[in-house]
Length: 218
Image 1 (spheres, rainbow, N blue to C red):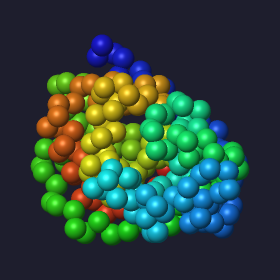
Image 2 (cartoon, one colour):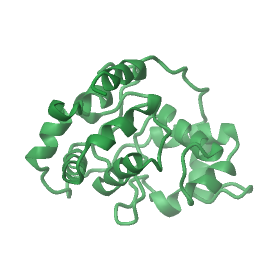
Image 3 (tube, rainbow, N blue to C red):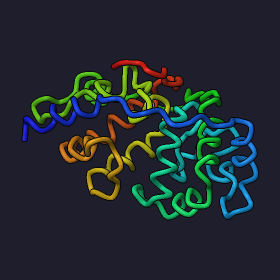
């Protein structure tokens, strides 16, 4: 097993072809009003500023890369990623509309996360150094310096809600989410304890939210 993780890590770094571009203005209309084909307005869950709702488990979308967002919408529409709320909405969007919505939210400035609690030291260590005694790499090895994200496969973690990060790590660990590159996150999440999941989630939630840099290398 120790040899599997480095292999998956290397495979995950192969570039993914960039999707076609979206129209941010058309995406704004869908985000605010939905479409006439069954997709509800994105703002009803993710807020007018795309900041999400941590209490309800809705993630921040503002400032995430358009490549990552469009991939998640495509995965929802195809059933590769499972969520009872998002799947019917994504399925009601045409391919271009998914690109448009992704372009809109990618252009939004992330909201301040100044009210997040100070991160625990254990979360910082795990995020920046990993836990190699248990073959867990540093989160920033894939998600980039500061957890700012590397499109299209590795989203920003910095400034994302702790409740959402934790729920996704738990989903990968349980096998209910499996749309990551080369099954890398499932392997990592299975090695994390519940205490580590909470600590690293709180660490990244307390970091300043910044937009990912297209083409950036970890």
